[in-house]
Structure formats: C-alpha cells, structure tokens
Length: 229
Image (cartoon, rainbow, N blue to C red; front, side, top):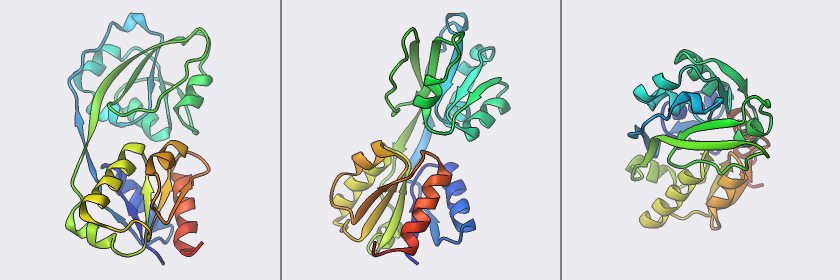
C-alpha cells in the first residue's frame, strides 16, 4: 500500500493521521506549519449579530480578544470548530458540513452583521445580499522547512493529504528547492481551491467529494489502494 502523508498543522495533523490509521492506511504525520497567535483587537460586540468562524485555531489562539465577543452566537464551519467554540464559552448557532460559504448562505435574517475571525490565509467568501462582514486575523500558519525524514519519504511514491492551498504551495516550493521529483507523488486535496493551488507536475491531483476529513480520507484510501490509477 502506498503511504499517506499528512502535512497540516497540529493538533489537526495528529487527528487526521490517527483517523487514517484507523481506516487501515499507512499514514505518517509531518506538519509543515506551526500555528501562532497574531496580535489583534476585538471591535465592539454590539456592532455585530454573530461570529463566523472557519477554524478551531481561532478559538485556540484568539486570546483575550475573544472575551469581549463572548455574547455573540457562533456560526462554525464544522463540528470541530463548533466544539472548540462551546469549550470557549460561546453559543453555537449553526454548524456547517460543506465549507464556510455554505454556512454563510444559510444564515438566518437576524444574523446579517457578521464578524469573521480567521487566520492570515482564508477562503474568499461571497456575501449574500443584505449581509455585511468585517474580518479580524487572530492567528497565522508559519511554514517550516521540509524535514530530512519527510524528504526521504517523498523520494518514493506517496499520497499527500492537502488541507489548504497554502500548504500545497509551500510543499511544491520545498520539493523544487530540494530537487524532489513530484511525478511519483499524488495529492488528495480537500477542495477545488487546494487542487488548483497544487498546479502541475504531480502524478495526480484529486479532490475530495466534500471539504471535510471524512471525505478526504475516503479519497486517500481509494488512492492508496489503487496506486496506478
């Protein structure tokens, strides 16, 4: 079986790797990013109806600025983010399953003034009519050089789980820097934007049927078991 390599930051890297191993995959976690907090100032909570949050890292690294916003309901991209919001004392108004745009499109009429809390790289969103949104960056994913043990793994055929466009661009740059051939490597991308960022040169770039870990690992499992497809 071709191995699966997970490169997302912790703690997500360990979680995805464990889930992949539970499916019987030969999975290894090598985070290529470290998540770090960013200095930010919370606006006045009464200027907004709700918070839009696309990552649990917002809650992990948001710091004291979150305290001023605790009375606002949260619309979360998925259950992991929703659970982090609950643990931080927020009320979760809705939880998505197909990306942040879907969450935004399903907002109730009472929640049209939004504050989006996000990382420095974030998915662009299209606002529905009558909706306004401000953004605050609370964390950043800082790229790391490719470690020697991962470089060695990538000299043989492998599947790489790519959770973000930023991650796959950084991986591409590191492969070029180290002279690693990309043709034997295949990308399992979380969504179309990630796949587009991968560009050419890989053996294959495939997209999960939905932007969540369950769908991504289902794709990776198929790719690992069918290496020459």
